[in-house]
Image (tube, rainbow, N blue to C red; front, top):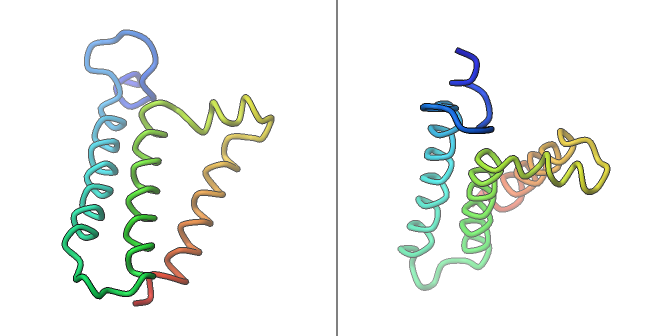
Amino acid sequence: MRHYFDDIIGPKNFPAINTSLSCFLLGSEGLLYLVAFHFQPARSPRSQTIFLLSQAGIFFYLCLDDRFLLHEQFGNHSGIDDHYILLIVGLLELALLASLGRE
């Protein structure tokens, strides 16, 4: 049962169902932010534009990270523990929500 709910590594039949669902949901969220960016009014504040694009970027990064294990690779190359990389992304998200997400 474990290989159905683990990261996608190696050839398996129907591997990592949770990773596939998570990637779909994270990518869909990023796409929704891009749609909101596309349909925002022409005179919307610049901070709203930055917020929508930053959220789309973060969710697309998280989608790719979940599928391709990017933070593990960054951690191996930089010598930083991989969980600190996700912590940095989380803190960046909190900062964006606190500063630009208020409008």
